Image (cartoon, rainbow, N blue to C red; front, side, top):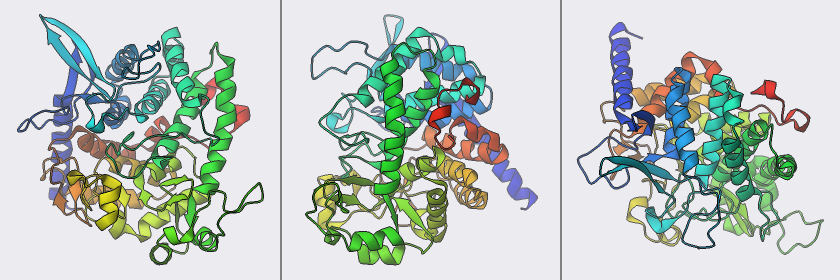
Length: 471
């Protein structure tokens, strides 16, 4: 690389760090988070909030730089917003929920935090992923600081257990997965992910792994037993029923419907004609594979969802063989999944009548835009982390080189549109904080692979699940 190019890229990183500093929110004189976007040319809406999911790359970045105070303050203040009682009112947040976002509000010179549990969200959907991400951030904080006593404080132990109670509650369901509505995660608008979307299952698995490590002095043995029971069931369920490769596709193609009992091969009664298996057979490389977007009664969503697959690699929800196959697929289908801006949130986009039915004619989720096949630069850090874990760092370097030539020039947009990510998103905010931090975190992970330990988990071993030395 030429010296002039290196200087340009150094300037881009410097600019990104300056923008990150400007995004920090202060509460009572202390840093507690980062706003969603710095663009102020339009109505703020909720882009002046600190979103839990958006703060994840910021938190990991701050931890990598030893700036523990902002992450500690974030964890403490969001925990105070967690309801600890059920008010038996369907319109109030339930016990254990972590808000989707919060903002600092000042009245008569007094500051307080205003939490949003979904009341102000599109379609008023309560976030499922906030609770899971919160535990993952707490785990990363303890890993970085070696301060296990922080997580052992009674209020934090109670907070973790309340989240676990929500996740492990008895339901009208007999799967180890979590049943959630459309719009409950990063894809926070209707997009046909109702049921058991991969993203939530991967985050659920990560949160279970983290909670099992952190609940060392838990007073509720039932919760710990529940986690131990759920972990292997969830892992095996996802690896067996969500996995798609050519061998599996051949089996699905020959499925018989209307099978009953324990001997049923087609356990979810999937009808092969509901799957575009001819196109999928051409798209799947011989050695590649991935985890399906959703599995449920007569449903196999064969769209590739990036966050779920990449998190499955990082948490070892996917096996080593499956992880390598996912990365091989990304390499072979680079133009579809990465192209000119890392990377597609899902592929392919849903179009025509399917788009109308799945999205309700959502004008923001037009085909190849926003959640419906749009390209999200924040996914760069997850791609980089997964590439490191699987020993495919050349893929991460290739993606970073693509991103850094455009992001600064385009003013750090929220997302890109088009089949190859060539267009700045039609309604994308500029100076999106997680676009900035996703880029910076990817660079930091490449410089120091040890930071991967903040977010990565080895293969699950029940006999070693609670050892403190693993933190």
